[in-house]
Length: 160
Image 1 (spheres, rainbow, N blue to C red):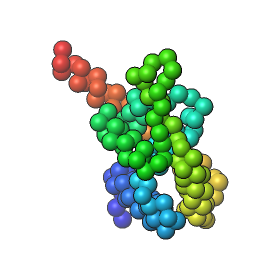
Image 2 (image 1 turned 30 degrees about the vertical axis):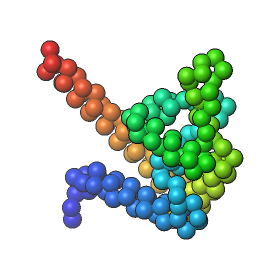
Image 3 (image 1 turned 180 degrees about the vertical axis):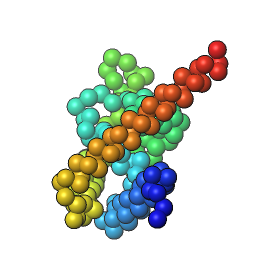
Image 4 (image 1 turned 90 degrees about the vertical axis):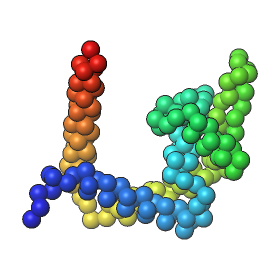
């Protein structure tokens, strides 16, 4: 038997790939297949922050994506009718990013689909098993953050 500790990254990557493919297939089957995963995440972000002023730079920061990439995504989503940009009264150069009615309805449809998929994915898994899973995921993230911090400090020492 192979020690699973040696391949945790590979197993997480496989699971991520399976989840992504399953989501893509379900989205396509439901008729909202022109939405990419990134579009869906942006729609959700805008929906959750609809009472705030959201600008392109907020999307860039939240998703750790470059300016030109976000510009292209926003243009495409605007062209498809999911969002719009609106000048801000105090500074006409700033454009607030807002969901349209189509974007709101799409968000609600995607959320319902994700809820159904989540229920099916968790079939046969007890609350206790989910609690253990959550603790392990948090510990993995802590360990990775610590490694990144250590690497950053080591990189600074090299630069000195």
